[in-house]
Image (cartoon, rainbow, N blue to C red; front, top):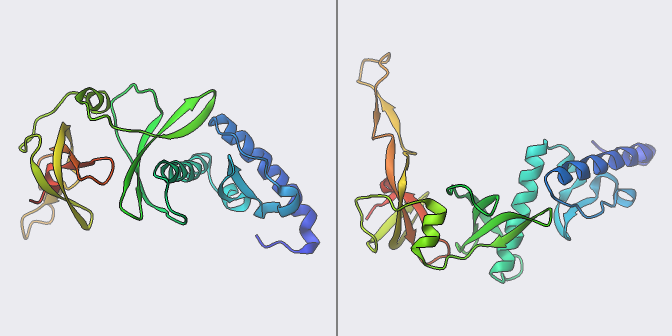
Length: 232
């Protein structure tokens, strides 16, 4: 919506309502917003958490509750990662990857934030004193910690310590296998049919589960890959 001087009063009324509504939604998620200065900036007012700018009131008011939470999480994960590595000015995150861990844990969620420098920073989201907090998670190198995160050691074709090259999207990395996780769903599963038989349902190829590995490529938190991503 485009606002003009003639409907400034209407904008302020809407901004006040949206700010109150958004504040209440965030409180349900244990997130405390900074005061939103809708009186001065209307719907263009910045929404912040602990002085960390998330987006404008106008932008966030268009989101559902779940999408609003995710937008705030993304910004706070990025800020925590930048702070943890003492990042240079203007460095940004490129990718946010949730990590599936065994439950229960002392935190809500575990994410890997990949920076423009390719550094992978592990951040956990926890609840402390009734508020969500975002902090660096550091591996201490012990098997006990990995068992706590991923469960008992699994089995795979490649042994611990094996040096391998992995394919992650369009990039390749080289590192050592640090841990073997329990098998996961095969992300490359596909169907095939015989030529000339379009109505056949076909068979699944390859298998529906595949071994997974934690590969330390010395770029931050190790990569979690399937056996099909090991290319050398």
